[in-house]
Length: 264
Image (cartoon, rainbow, N blue to C red):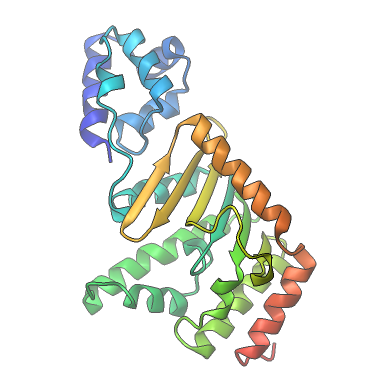
């Protein structure tokens, strides 16, 4: 994701005799944002690229050769994983299955087993370790603040079977009861809503601009452009306003867990 672009930016910065902080000061950006671009973990917005061109006197090179946003979802996975670890606030919308940071081991294995083309047992185990490591962001009792907006389809589709689903739904309930996450369910009765096109992750940080990540079939997009991120934030807020309250959502989760055979 933008690694060659980041390398070129680093070369131009060093050729100009600037540190990351000095370039950030001139371009009106944060040092960490510069570092993420150079490492290939972030793609600058068009506005940021223009400021970098001006700061480095590179004409319109950085603006003209921005990396494409539409790439295979797997190509963005590492960047998204790293950003999750740095985020102070994460808001998830799940359309088809639970967000990675909330998945239990057996649920995650069932999801990974559904991959096409099929993967070997060794590859499935490797991906499973990475998937479960993402849940470590919840080890801190406070940060990041996590909200999960779940389409009712996520709860009704028996991924891995009834026993796996009962365990998975109970896990979400426990996190919510402990106050570690806030969960809301978008019931089928709402019908169409602003996030029905794809899953969505919104992330905020202490020292860099917020980002959004959307994902569909064999396609992932990490959004940096402020106008796009704001639009997706507004869509999330609008959808959330139609969702069940926290208490009603937990009541539905408990009913679903019981339907799957959980007596807890």
